[in-house]
Length: 388
Image (cartoon, rainbow, N blue to C red; front, side, top):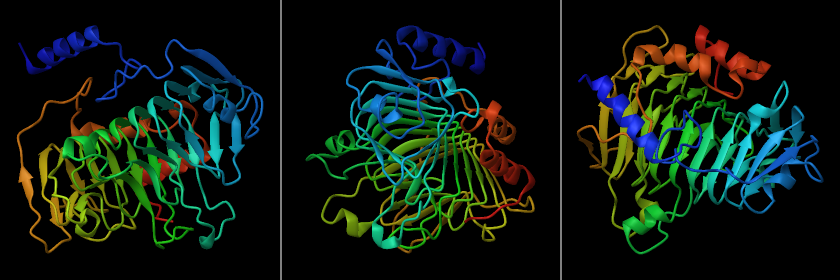
């Protein structure tokens, strides 16, 4: 039996044992029910609140599937959305053209069993000043689990565009820390682009793609386009564990993929070794990328286990780049490991196929892209654009 045939049989057996969130769902969160079996709630207005609004649907109790009878822009006027009630599916693909775009907002997921598909979230400054404290992610998990963010377009974040976060040390053991923060999360087929470099974040420069916070575990990042983010494409922090598979990373600034355990943030807590699987990713330098940027860089003070297979890294002119580098003088080490078991429904494609696949499939409504997504994709194809 070939490896491919064996993989197909194993995948079929796994699917037979559990119902997937949707047929192409992947990762440790692939079997989340989301709002399956619950109420169908129809969004009938582009107003930010009130009857028929998205906000009303998010605040409804019980399992629910949110569908849209309207398409267009919902302006939340610098109000962040907080999802605190579990068992939710947001089906942006149900909206008529041009789909749903949320502006002057960010979504915090602070619960479990949530599926978000085919939304655009374009956070932006929205008229804020730095002293106003306006620092949202486009979408963030805050101690969330069993979450899938799939086929979304996430741009102009003030903190990150897309992240999995939460408390570092919720509990008394490392196992409890991992359960007490975000875990079992999939970020698939998204456009994660143009984090704003000089907006309203208190730290100043803050163009960031994705942060996987300390001790977050079972995180799958697959099939995404990262474009024009200065750092965190993505960043895994101390003790975090996950897989980065078949992503296209275009025109990063100081870092592409990186890992960093910051000693000052861990204090007297024992350092935990992170784990990162890198399979079939493509890094392409662009106009904002410094010469010689590696695919992966190690910073900080903690060790990380790495499995690396079939990744491509080239500069703006197509010359090969190193796979590994460092931005620390501490004794932190990259520890090579054997290939771990891949989670549900994950079947990596060859890296040589990734660019075309991601260009065709990433983002909200790839069959109906808006002008912003179309521009970001064109930048990626043509090797142009910049961090903003």
